[in-house]
Image (cartoon, rainbow, N blue to C red; front, side, top):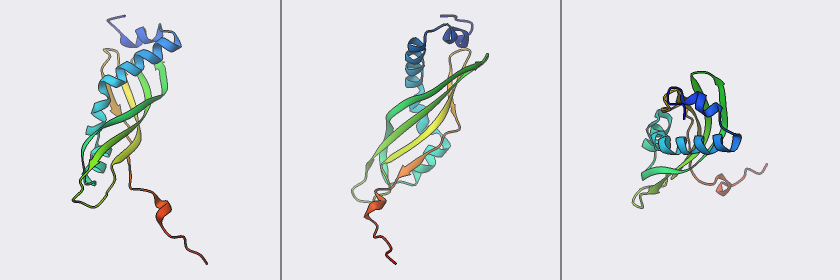
Length: 128
């Protein structure tokens, strides 16, 4: 690995190796998504506890800039419903942009989050 520039190292990898390395790098940092403002706001609005990352998926990798890699990530978080409280969602889905710098550090930006509040199909349809 080019210890001076992680981005230059990434550019030397085959497509499969790049995807594997990026997946591993995102895996190491993905727990930070829980602290993102959009996510913490959704968590605070729920009655669930114990939120954690369920799954994530690397959607796109952009190595066009010399000083950073931009990686679009989709994710799902889940929490445990408190049985003594009304259901307010136990799943949060969204996307984030992971920025990997030349030192290999990862930070998340442009985080979106939407809490699953249940199935809307249970609502009666208006019939005219």
